[in-house]
Image (cartoon, rainbow, N blue to C red; front, side, top):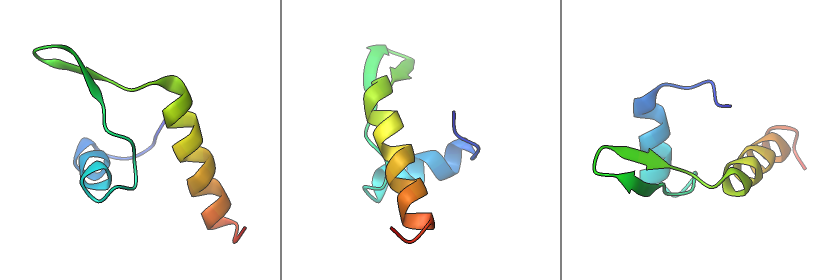
Amino acid sequence: MLRCSRATLYREIKDGLFPRPFKLTRNKNAWRRDDVKKAIEQRRMATNGQ
């Protein structure tokens, strides 16, 4: 869904620009689909100046 590197994604999480994942297993993280869609929409609105 996102077109960015893993490093960019985790930097945005650290900066509070993207929601934090939750642990599925010791080595796997996941995000709630609605949280990701909301973050993408907020980013789109900010880019369009709304």
